Length: 412
Ligand code: ZN
Image 1 (cartoon, rainbow, N blue to C red):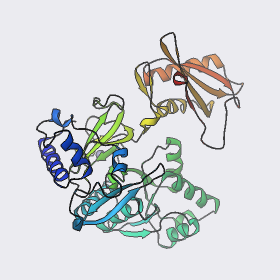
Image 2 (cartoon, protein in one colour):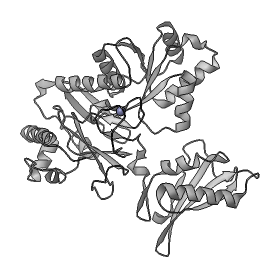
Image 3 (cartoon, rainbow, N blue to C red):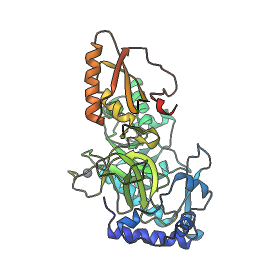
Image 4 (cartoon, protein in one colour):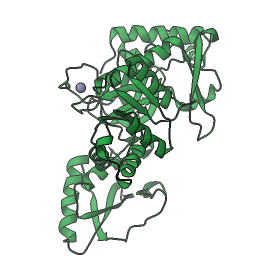
């Protein structure tokens, strides 16, 4: 997806503001001798911005306008050191509300809906974003925030909420609680769920959709770029539409930084086209996805990306091919005869990479035949044949915490 003339003009406006304000990225551009871009080729030469840069600008170094224009800040979680602070002007807040309201509309939600919002409110952008979009749409917000399941279920029934906004794990928990407590299903009026995009399995999605009797929508966003609400899937569920009147989207090879062809997996890079408080140029999200080529049956021309496949940190480069654990997981999910445990080992021998996949099954299955069938399916998915080893159930290591399922012996 090439950047358009109009988008280029918007980028130039942002560059001008960044430099004029003496902001962190403005100085970076000045140092690189850049004051304008004239073509898609020049745009692609602009330096990336990284989360580490944003941290360096702490606390307010990203501000690209006079402080009198700033109406609030948000902050991304600082689990790994200094947090990132993003300043917003009133226009930024309004634009975010417009994008978010559009998300609700695309999901078929109207001003007649009652929206139960369970993500957290505060410094981060989740709850407040869901609220902003809801009010812009004219629907009724039920601003619960996270936790307190008793009260969530009470309000869900008494207020007859029709839309649930939550993470996938909390939606699953509510599904299970409703069943556990034997709550009369006729008292639950939910019809849709808007789920903050994270990696979640098809099995989990099905469980929630069936358990609550709702349609599910994946919403995308990150604090550095407004927050949630910059894209959502439509009812055809063919990927998330991204609002390219506010953002320019690129998919790059995370290792070379070069753009990948549409349809190929890579890292999402976003440029904000209208943002005033803290514009970002070519921001590396470290989220992995791909552009979905072609037209959506809904007729909207907004580009689409696939559900987030993981983070660049999860990516493995094997035999020159980018492989993601999720791809292997999806193939393995097609084999009911194996357990949910698996292990991937990558090693380098005699100048060649090899990938071995260990899976578990019980004694009623022909191990050799199963290994061959799995290897074939994996090959058709990733392009080369792995060595598949089938072992008895219980042989692979298990742990209470996150089990290490990928072991790359090439770097040991
Ligand atoms: Zn669509």
